[in-house]
Image (cartoon, rainbow, N blue to C red; front, side, top):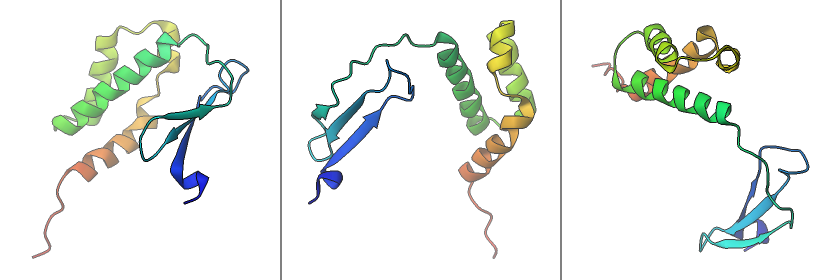
Length: 114
């Protein structure tokens, strides 16, 4: 078995000098194997975390409820009491609506043709 098939590599999404770390994990044992020697140290972005949490809430509601997707998005944005800067970071309704419709369609069983 080749080295590439035995190990999985993980890289930080930030490509600056503080986030350019790569770690390798064994696929068989799922344990740490080695790394590139760069220390991973950058502060987490609380706004990105909050954005991800709000979008996850929206996705779960889209899957659990049959309310209009537009209404779900507007309610979650309203509940979050977003600051001006957070509002700029959040995707517009038109940007995420199509993906959420697709997510909802995939979760529903198909209609039989009989």
